[in-house]
Image (cartoon, rainbow, N blue to C red; front, top):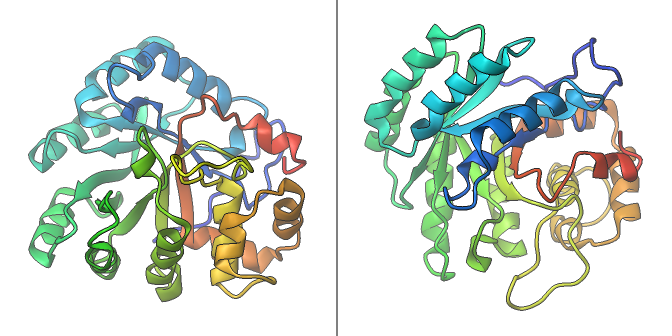
Length: 297
């Protein structure tokens, strides 16, 4: 069962429930040639998690292939408490049991929260059942059906998202990436929310690099989705506030989005964050402090 995350009572500053535990550090899932070093990521993550805005920091996302290095670096760093881990399958499902065994054996360093894997658009119940067999009950299985980059087979992608959700796994939305085609259109995001939020299914997102959608857009980059835009869009899909989901996703005025966020009731925030559980970010160039600049922290 998923619960709404909340900041620790030990945090120097309390974090609003809307943003508590929202930001996962996904730096390590970048391509090897561009990803920062393990030691740099661990140092930055621990500093952020244990810092002033630590209540906003969620999981550290790590591919299975880089897990041994991560364990070594965490042992050297000696974190004050275990790191919440999102384990990404990049070497096949068969590697998951050994990886989880490693994580469970280092409980002072790591706590497994999710196991995340990609799936083909034509994913079926047999494949999903295999995923479930590898993931223990106390860990959330997150599955990302690959969205077609050429704009075709969108219906098949959405059908796969629905299958993932109905099977009890958490669908993942890739909202950005290294290529322009990694960014879904506003319509595609809207339809993804119809399938997930519209049917009361939770989801996660990855690839977000902006707090608010930039105003300068080109045909080449198709625009870049903002974290705050997506939060407000989920509220709109739940029937909260004025305006449409598309309006929220297109909005480039930070003041309007902040006003929309601040107008959410406690109950609305609980409903929203139960469905939109977290989002994986590469903190460079986006910093959690940008939310503070907007007056949200």
